[in-house]
Amino acid sequence: YMSLKQYIGVIFIGTLIMWGGWFVVVTQIDPIVAGMIGMMLFYSTFFLALLGTFALIGAFYHLVRQRGNMDERHIILSFRHAIWYSLVVNFTLYLQAKRLLSWTNLLILVLLLAIIEFLLLSRHRHTQSRI
Image (cartoon, rainbow, N blue to C red; front, side, top):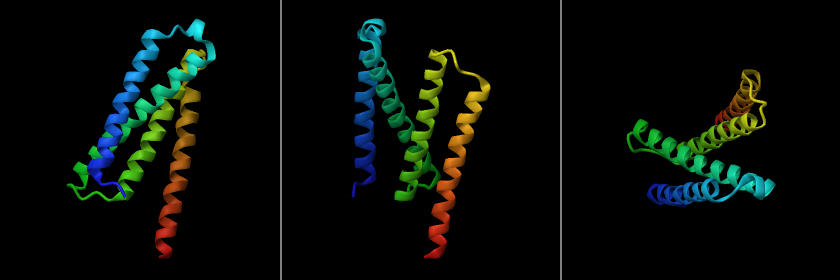
């Protein structure tokens, strides 16, 4: 297993690399010339950069909230939330680029992810209560 310092270090370095990659994509790749590959590079580097950023924010939040007594449950929870937040931001940006973004679409996306999170938390609590 990785220690908390190692986890934060790996996520931090990976996040810096992804923000650098995203910056290169934004400044060096012409989306008209690059086509689908350019768009995939844009959205994937942006997603991974956001994922790392939100994971670090979540880890620090739980670290402060737990007064330094974090366990792997908090890391898993903060990483899962980082995935949801990154998906929402990335998908919202994609919908806006396609001129399909509306409050209804955004609300449906957030509700869908909230239901998934609720089911995951319910499943986790159900399996803990059986032990």
